[in-house]
Length: 112
Length: 114
Image (cartoon, rainbow over all chains, first blue to last red; front, top):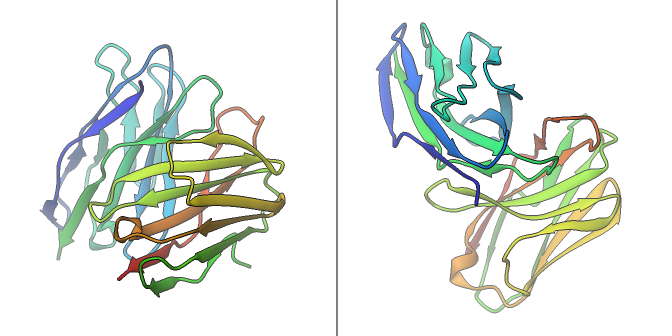
């Protein structure tokens, strides 16, 4: 079945550091890929998405590129802020299904 | 003007009790979902309804029964609560048939079974 694997956390960075959170997926065909973010005490919010190979999703300084050859969708940000502290989830849907399959989440803490 | 709301936010109860969690969305969406997030933050879909009809039913015990009285509401009733049901339950909604759509999540209900 479909699955998503993302790097284990927690990740702790200093403000203005470069962030990478790795995400790889297993799926047949061409899934759509997402990054969701969960701030403390809140529900999830869509951060960015990509629906086909080589698409780049971007939002709030975060970027991720859909790489079919490596089945990856790594999240990057050039300069993190304290307000980026949250749990980040990589996810996919496939075949017109609305069912989101999530990775296990990566907790990011950014220190001033 | 909350988009997806859930009540209650916290629910503490004893094993064996029956409880309900309510979800409402005012986004005009036609599809709603329930997700369970365990203590390790792992999120898994439980159910999905489209226009009040069940379309996704993952391997969830029969003690869990979703009910959708209309497109804007999807409630979750849980019978005979067990310790392992302790988790955060998230409701979400989306508009189907629009290509790849965003799901909007509620703030979650933290259920603790003692």
